[in-house]
Image (cartoon, rainbow, N blue to C red; front, side, top):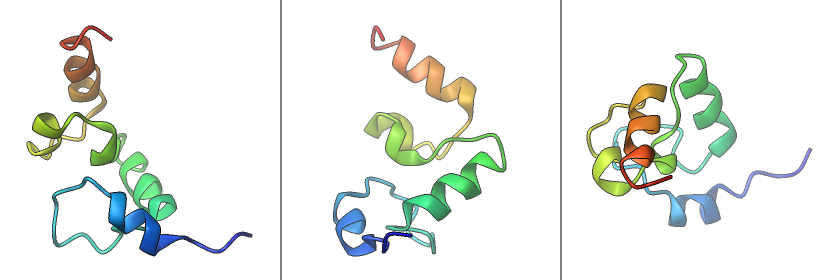
Length: 68
């Protein structure tokens, strides 16, 4: 298994949830969110990420509103 590049990931992580212990460890972040049928904040546009609503419906709504 390749070594986690958490330092590099952390520099480009756009999640604003400061108490998160998984910041920079993308595989753990994705697994945690997906276990609740959510997506990580980094996949949302900035203004939607700040709502902390990580639901699939919010994700679809956010990108649909932008024409995607």
